[in-house]
Length: 276
Image 1: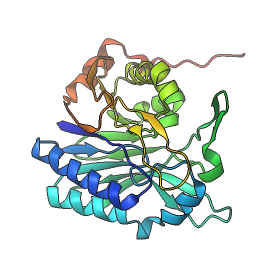
Image 2: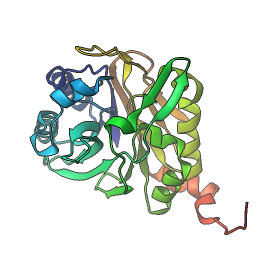
Image 3: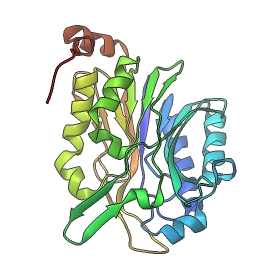
């Protein structure tokens, strides 16, 4: 299976982001990709809640979902839209950070709302409260497709190993981690955490990422780490997107999942214990 990770620098103009993503999808398909993945918040990277409220739409009306689904159908590929910010109609006005798996027929095969919210004091004078604007999801999602069994996660979920273990024990062969990682935590933890999740689960880990400085009509311009990564079940880094936007190709052999798990069958060795 040939996969393609789209490393993007999405701004806060969804129309421009859609055209960039569609162009990169065509490049990926022309390079032979069967499975194309975009990063977190493909439609709008913004630090402004007012801007998000202005440009985001409910799922049924979202032009990015419609446009990328149509492109997947035209190209005949599987597509993971890493995530879109979508309006929910919740009484408190919060959005959902929602990942979509789209089939080659253009239909949504699975959707996942990010469970863990990035509420951190990242450094002096910089606090991020994702839960102020987004409401957390409540359900883990494993999608069974002709390509593979795919466990869907998003960005900050990466720090919660039990989620990935449960997905793997439920049958996941590929774990997706679309992200818009902060440069500070990215430089410190990104590669290590992704490799750890692959090693612990014996899964392929595919992590398409936002990168660079993101154009902003309103509010401050965000920066993200980049380095879209593909990691093998034994922990080898198969591809690293570096810091520039572009398409990152990687070929996957799902037999490597069984091979890694047969060498170290840790997923079968859970034991109950007492304490602490």
